[in-house]
Image (cartoon, rainbow, N blue to C red; front, side, top):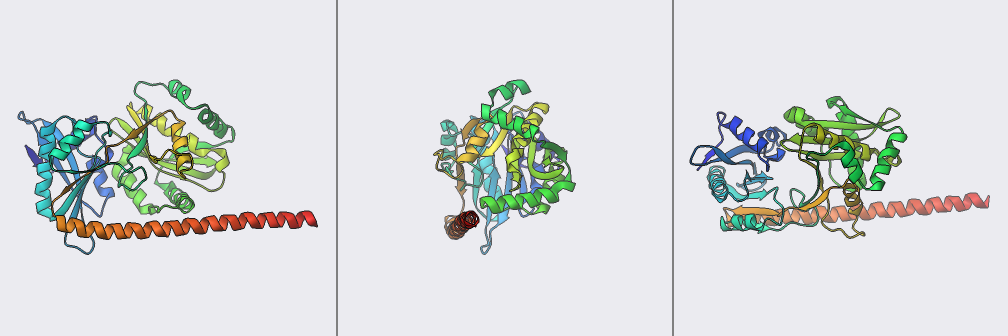
Length: 374
């Protein structure tokens, strides 16, 4: 049987999610204040003995221009993958929420590897439409991630498993004088500034400082801001989250200057060390592209994360329960048009950046030629 979480049962919900092997910070109630534009509801499944056997955090948001809402269970549900009774309970509970909030669909992107075909079949049998993972970053959550098994490991054992180039760059960073500090909200201004610099360089939209402030407030000791300094100047930073048996690398930023001192290697190492300190089982590097061809622009990101000895994990993709087919068609068509427009704008921006780079290279060559002729 299912039940909608109340203030009285919220501690049971949170305890179950936090201690379950499939628990995830995106399924925690602690994450709800970070998504202030969404309403939070929680669902529980109990066995005949009354013990909690499943949970699911659901975010609900009104879609612009239509009288419908979308429900989203990020990295849910939290239960044993083989527990079909719990999956059915949570699905039935979501249907009740859909009627209450006039939701046209529920989307779920479970923390479940693609090899778990029995789970995929169970979700399909409950009426979900399965959307296999995308090799690019077109889903709400990345479908491909790098994960490092740190369970029972020592720092020495982990370092020994790193790629030799990664160990070299880690030592080089220390020799160059880079230091990493655990910081508070007082450094968020610098972190946001460097993040904006990173977004402009790599072509992605960044969050405002207020978003990161809310995140640190909401997650408390579960979140950490690490900043890398060179000559006492902040040049890179990361935001990490610890929850349950995992630590996640959530956001990273690096200045265009001083990248040659390799600050990102030390930042990753400090977050991995945090995973060891907390007794976690997994350090999650988060997303990489599923296209592993060397000519992929994101191949360098793959090599960087791979160098720390982790495992490439492919998740099973997204599941969608459609409650109103007409509304689903209208909203998806509108969203598809918006995504196409954003993609075209990004392509234009990339072309402009490439043109400016070529012009700059050409200008430097011309100046060199003029100088040598004088």
